[in-house]
Amino acid sequence: MRNYEILFILRPDLTEEEVEASREKVKSIISDNGGEVTKLDPMGKRRLAYEIQDYREGIYTVIYFTGDDKTVKELDRVVRITEDIIRYLIVKND
Picture 1 (cartoon, rainbow, N blue to C red):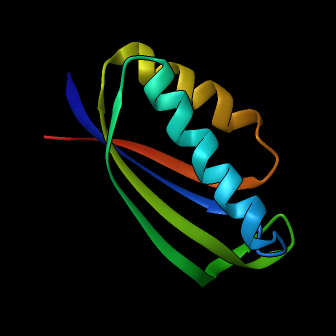
Picture 2 (picture 1 turned 90 degrees about the vertical axis):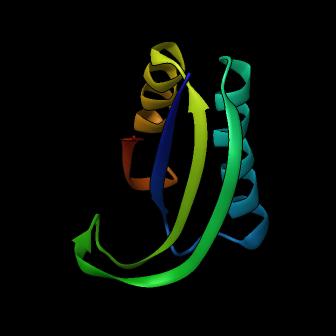
């Protein structure tokens, strides 16, 4: 098992319940595929460096987790098609 982190930016027009539901969805994908969430860091709403899909702000969240290649591939697949997430990045921590 390796250590990873995912940073994702949610649309700024989501309600608090929708934001929490999106975070729980990502956490459940990790745990359902053999991973374990070690830390969740909600960074809140921040201004974007440039416009993404006509949004100037986004709701940032960082999740640290352990998992294998299968976990990361499934997470990448699901996050890519989730419309509430406007940008994401998954990196391996050594």
